[in-house]
Image 1 (cartoon, each protein chain N blue to C red):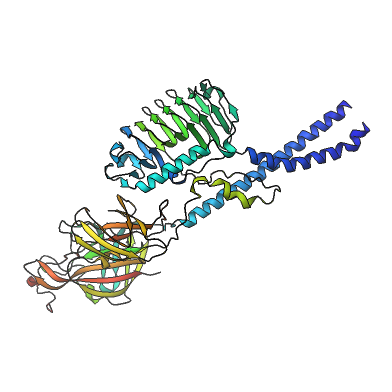
Image 2: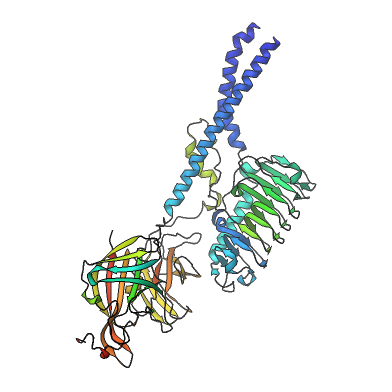
Length: 390
Length: 198
């Protein structure tokens, strides 16, 4: 009794003190985090080979890219995509932009994110369901955590509610398959990750959330919707009247809490752990390129040059008929180029952006080149003799 | 003894609870600040878009008594900027910049009509440096431009008129020179350059 009386308060204080020191530590080491998607972040759909198929009409918000397969394999039209369709060659659908460099970088960043979903603080499974097939809707609701399954794969057969806020990582060593009409609710789609070591199939009218990173292919059946991304590393993405909306995710959506020993000095080490795949790309000194001179060569080609030199002589030129709506793109080394095969006699908006092998610096200002001939605004003056001085 | 243990357990769980709340609060605010910082950083590196002006609907030039409706114009098959369908309206080159946007907005107007009567821009040549132009848009806002210079061009391409994009310009175009009955066109073009009044 007396011992408790004597030491009770001290013990409590001691435990509080210990708690103060231990709490940030334990939290930091257990914190799962959203990997950076790097340049893949802008995409709603990325696929490898052979194609992106589509039974119309789908509605895609975000960019679409196919690499290394030819652009001829892209079954989406520009009208179905609120964003840009990127292809590795000129065989893509009308309005697609040829940018193999961007696609290669995006696929590398996708692979990095795929790897980071099982690395570092994300390595340990919060719950490991073992080898048998697991229907996640039977476990609903699920709080943030890393959920793992073996060869049987994940299923979502009814509704899976994600409760609370944080990061969810679902790792399947095999497939992820939903049942018709099933749904995933809750959670920020930027922080919900589905990693499938084979393929993922969302059955008819499934309402799904999160970023799907599949090693092989992703299939969406009739009417399935996805708030997130369908990113297939090697295989195809197959669509059938689907809606995909990729919310823009900040590169460091959930910074890893710092494991700094004292609670006050945590801000210094945040940037080192959170940024993942983009760390190796050298930054571009972005001085807005200015067009010095532009000249229409003939009805369908315009030549122009620009400056100044500010550390790079490689540029991406985007151009189109309206300011901001870039229908075409070309990479140029040097400070002048001629755009050919343009719509006859149409003025062209041009945006020049400095670039290097892994990124594009969007600091240029769009400019109209190849403006029309000055208008003919007069009629024969002899009738009235107007302006007699000429 | 037992009650004492109970008391300790209760007080412990209470402090644990308080601690948990305190830390989760600290953790959340810290992360929110970080997120904010990341967003701020991101927005700094991007070009912050200015609010775009509305569609231009009316051009007013007090110095030459012009108060004209603005039509939307494109390009003819011959690669010329189109002209307004009437001699009392002026026309804005829609594929180009909007008046007030960074870039060169271009408005054309007739010099005369089919029977020689003066068009809306018949007196354009009398505009001088410092004269004011006003463009009203469909949202009711009015922008003022100040005449910088007038110049005579040959008919043909003039990227200088359409493409300059250091600041916001408004350029007015009409015919000048003598009438060439073979080409059914005047021999020159008059361009009045003006800059947005800041």
